[in-house]
View 1 (tube, each protein chain N blue to C red):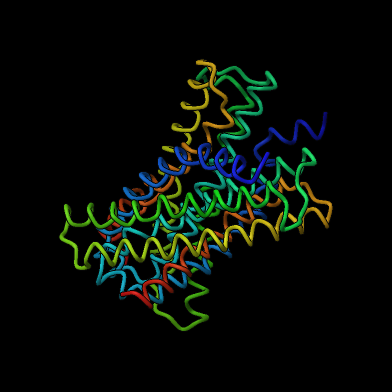
View 2: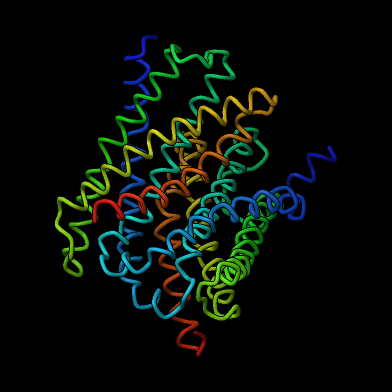
Amino acid sequence: MTVREVALEAYREALPVLALSAVGGLFAGVVLGGMDAELQDVAGLLVLVPALLATRGNVYGSLGARLGSALHQGLIDPRFSFDDDRINAAVAAALANGVLISGVAAVMAVALLALVGRPSAPLTTLVAIALIAGFVSGLLLTIAVVSVVFVGYRHGLNPDTLAGPVVTTTGDVVGIATLLGATRLVLALGGG
Amino acid sequence: MAEFASQWSVSGIVRTMFPILIVLTVIELGSGLVLDTFEGTLLQYPSLLVLVPVTIGMAGNLGSILAARFSTAFHLGLLSFAATDDRLAGNAIATLALAVTLFPLVGAGAWLLQTVIGGAALPLRTVVLVALVSGSLLALLAIVVTTVTTYAAYRLELDPDDVVIPVVTNVCDVLGVVVLFGAVRVLV
């Protein structure tokens, strides 16, 4: 293949996926843009944003890849039930990872802000926000990933190519929207 | 079989993934700190705040797509690390072309959405320029980071599929914020 052929093929393959994730990212941005009041009220919240968004991709992208590989190997059936130990374990592990790492990220963010001498909301406020956002977004993303991978597989689509774009497009929107919801809830309950 | 069973137990999956997640979180908190330092500018111009998740996401995606293609080419024995390598050059050009195509649209989209919702404080031209400059720089950085990481994995005899994609995606996330910060400082 010549350089031109390689470049054209790579461009054509990636453009739709990237365009789709750009649309998801823009909607996530609109939610973040509307969060200016909360970002001002809770010092240090913005520090958490990249970490929480990346976690969603790392954890639930990996869940999608795991389910995709298992479907290809015939280890699991693409059916929704609570009887399959493998699916239950994969989902429980993803949720545990997603919630735990969100809490750890909040603790590390507060430590980091103290270290560089920048203002930060109380530890309990940021940890509460991160745990609630981590749990709710985890549930929503699990439903999204499992549904798309199973339904796609039943319709003859390759789950490996589905899981990535689904997580990158929905992950940002769900991640920021749940962060906003969790922040409002914690502020309403008197944190801050 | 024992190894197999552990792959599908909750504690097995958590034990494998959690250390990696901690490292990646530390990297991402670095970019969070950069965001925090220019929070004032972002809150003053919400169109720029709208650009934050999409710039992070696109940077990570550009890097991860390139990394996946390099890994596959590498496994198939199709990749040599010479500047004259057709596959290396072709994929690098495609990455740059994708960024130049999509980032101006992303900038225009951010401006349009912010105008509809809350009124934009910055002119369309500025937001598009910030997006285009950030995107082009990010594409160049993604090419360098991906090539260096894939080469390092090859020299250290690690499987590029396991190592390169998470490293490249998260490093590009961080670079996304740093580059956006730089572009805003210079252009706004």
